[in-house]
View 1 (cartoon, rainbow, N blue to C red):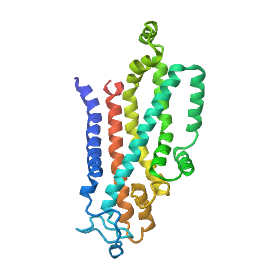
View 2 (view 1 turned 120 degrees about the vertical axis):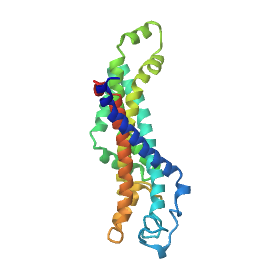
View 3 (view 1 turned 90 degrees about the horizontal axis):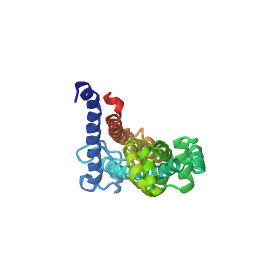
View 4 (view 1 turned 90 degrees about the vertical axis):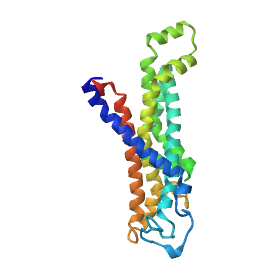
Length: 278
């Protein structure tokens, strides 16, 4: 590899390593929360209200005497699960329908593109609020709402790839050999789109975390007493004068998660961009 190529590739690789390390640590903390958490995140003690950080309560306690550090660990579990499930749902649905639209073309493409444009006309947060308000608060409904708001990004990328690939010579050769459309899509078009879909999914994970936290902050997330990072920030703001750390610590947790995911997504994008090594 030439020196110029190494210089162009190195930043992307470093970003992937740093981002993956951050996310690995966060995931490990979330998975091992029942063993790491020093206290039960749902046990209340009015005698321990608004305790400052100490050896017993590492990040202090909230207005019900619940350990903030333990609640952040458990909040990570719900927030990461919601972000991952909604992004996976959006990727599967957006990729499948986008390929169908681009490969079929004609009236199918026009109708699906019009529906996608209609969905994109709503700002993401507004669409999320409307959907959750209609479905009701809860983790499952939150996953559905975030997936719907993330759908257009995957649809557009998959549709563009299908449009570019459907008239290639090797696709025409497959048709001449009698391959079914299902086989052509599954064996030759879908694999060509997966790298881009994975990169978009990594970048949208950070957006999903932000959206989940924002909806939870305004009361449309998992209902109490479930701990989510956005809900913890909301609780902290309600008691900001009593103990500012209740809002600061979960906000920092959200920031760390988003930095790790953005670094991974940007690194993967740079590593797969031919212009980055030009």
